[in-house]
Image (tube, rainbow, N blue to C red; front, side, top):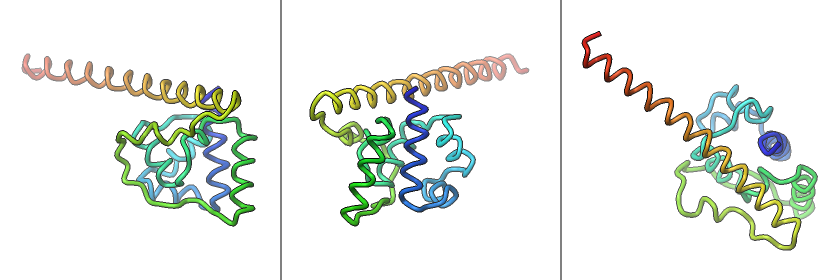
Length: 150
């Protein structure tokens, strides 16, 4: 459910920005198909890419995981104020500011949103841990094979 919201919200943010998938993918150094898979919830970004997305659009982390209706409301507020996104090009390096991009909770609704963001991030982290464990296993098997001379 969280990742489906992520994909819907990513698509909404991109559409609001008026940018095409291939341009964003190029700026974030991704394949266009990868970006498309994020928007359709077929795959999820790693933490570095997630940070780059937030930095690129200059948006709070909550906007990627919140209810889509809330996101649309926030985008409409920007539109009324004459503001646009993206604001910057990312450096792509997660740092101590990574989780600070989550808006502070203001009332129950936003506290739920923050919980959803944390849950979404935990899902992504767990997936990344599984990928790393798989790669470590593969590396270990290859090292053993090299040692045996096969």
